[in-house]
Amino acid sequence: MQTIHEQFVQTAEVMQGKTLFERPGQADISFLQMRETVERLAGALTALGVSPGDRVAVQVEKSPEAIALYLATLQVGGIFLPLNTAYTGAEIDYFIGDAAPRLFVCDPAQAEAHSHRAGDALAVETLGAQAEGSLMARAAEATPREDRHPCGPDDRAAILYTSGTTGRSKGAVLTHGNLASNTEALLDCWRFTAEDRLIHALPIFHTHGLFVAANMALVAGSTMIFLTKFDAEQAIDLMERATVLMGVPTFYTRLMKSERLSRETTGGMRLFVSGSAPLLAEDHRAFTDRTGHKILERYGMTETCMIASNLYEGDRIAGAVGMALPGISIRITDRETGAELPQCEIGLIEVKGPNVFEGYWNMPEKTAAEFRPDGFFITGDLGMIGEDGYLRIVGRDKDLVISGGYNVYPKEVEEAIDALPGVLESAVIGLPHPDLGEAVTAVVVPKGDGLEADSIRAALEGTLARFKQPKRVILAEALPRNVMGKVQKAELRKTHADLYAKTMA
Ligand code: MLC
Ligand code: AMP
Image (cartoon, rainbow, N blue to C red):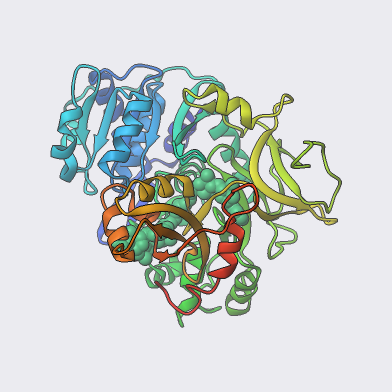
């Protein structure tokens, strides 16, 4: 196995002056320039005391230098820990406490807010969207490192935090083998090559933007049209110079809102990929009607990287996520007994293969609870494999909301709401939303009079990242419960199913 960093170095050797990053209104960055930046950053990391196995936590705006920092961390044998830029100080406290990184890199604008964290055990540096800040200044002074710490497939490469069912986020530990094997499988399945030009509009602190999109381009030698955020009109403008778009379903619903989306404007594109959340079958068909392109839907998870994909040459079925990627096994099991189910029966989706993570950081019990003795990982998604052999996801066994591709575990939001004065209890659910797929929504039972929905939303500012905050708060006299006293979320979802139907709240 060659690590993603080793493969990037090899690719850069071949690609040399070819553009790796193209950014509107900014200078291009070539593969060679990127390699030099990575080598300098590796020197800076070493000077900052980052040793093999050390965590490098990073909460920065999207930039080529942030990708270089990821590669440099892999080069020195560190463990890359990217954090959503939306996380608040309280959320960062938890991640730093849990992962105990050697280095924390934050935005220059946040330097003061995080300065108290710096000490003997933790260095704090800054990196801005335009490469400003202390880290690149150190890199400029550092002795570049060409050598790399040797890493095998089982060595740790990254930790990605996913919110937990209990309200406590879990750090999914991914190995070099996980990342390298998944990139290899995807390059092959999607016929992704150096000829491709990828519109990269995803955030780079998640699997989708970093370990799918960026890794593929870094290894294949393709150009990334690197955008700080997704804008449908800008994406349509860029399509004549691009070949591939990878996005969450919200990208596609937003594209379809533009009158300019047509066969002509998408004519030069080779492939549209969707994942991270369910793509409605009707949106899949509508996109084909408008553009002639069939979106290729795939299925993945932070803990497993990509699991399944529709076929590049073959059927791309609306409402299905395709077949297991090479080397990966999928099975459907009974929720109660764990026994494997035959085709066409609905059960838990379980997965095994070189893509499956090592476990949760410092959480051996939680890790053990999510693996079967024979090594299969229980995804918490419900699905079935049809007669055509294609996997279909039909629901979730886990209490999870996916809003615009971001996961939100209701428990964490409920705990924050329940802690507010005047709140008796709450239930957080995901309701169908025309833009985000699902919108985080809170049903709150006040203790007495005087509690207002808006004041609840306002009180969560600063505690919870914006995407976790409820888009709407509904006040209720009581929560529906079954005989066991368990809150009936399905009933709440049914009662309020149309809340966002006509609005874009
Ligand atoms: C932004 N906001 C969101 C949100 N994104 N709220 C809920 N859910 C989201 N996903 C907030 C903003 O803070 C803002 O709040 C308001 O909503 C409107 O913002 P916007 O300008 O419309 O949002 P935008 O920046 O356009 O972002 C929407 C988005 C983005 C869908 C383009 O969220 C996105 O890029 N999502 C992709 C997430 C992703 O990469 N997931 C992959 C996870 S990996 P206010 O109140 O300030 O106005 C994974 C595995 C796998 O799942 O299989 O891939
Ligand atoms: P995350 O933990 O952020 O990686 O999110 C993973 C979850 O996203 C999975 O467990 C699924 O529930 C969901 N997901 C990813 N891709 C798809 C897809 N194509 N269709 C439906 N759900 C998806």
